[in-house]
Amino acid sequence: EKARKKRLSTTMNIRSLFAFLIIAVVGAQEYAEYGDDYAQQDNLYHDYAMRQQEKETGKAGGMGLGKLIIGTGVGWLAGAKIHSDRLRKKLNKKHQEEQKQLYTQYYNDVYALQEQNGQLVQALEQMGVRMK
Image (cartoon, rainbow, N blue to C red; front, side, top):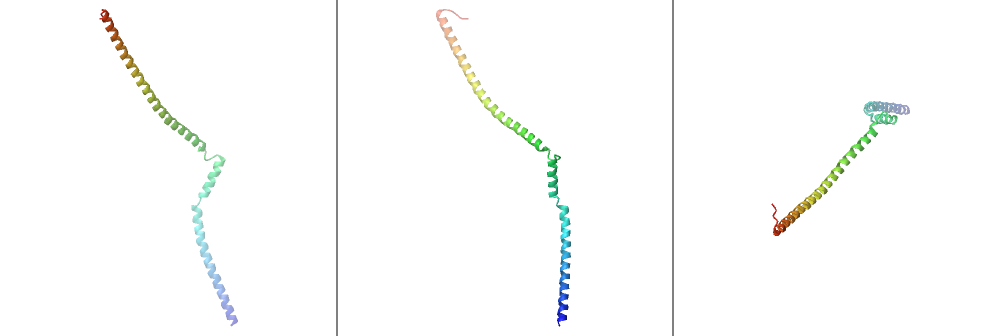
């Protein structure tokens, strides 16, 4: 009976070991297949690392300073356009007010001169001097 139990135990151990090996091999095959697909698809970090290395050696990313200078120039021109438009509007309004004031002064001066001429003509007529 002991021999039979020992043989049964050994058989069970061999079957368990065989089942474990089958599961391990099948699992490893699935993982290997997954790993191969993943390795082919995932090169994102590799691309990132290559780009960083190229930046350090000066081969890539050379437009960084150029982009900064171009962006600064465009921003400066846009700001100049905005501020010059504001200044133009402000000066136009100021000049219109000055022009209106100048025309008003001119009109008043001409009106005063016409009245003064009329009074002088009247005074001369009273004295007996005829004008045209």
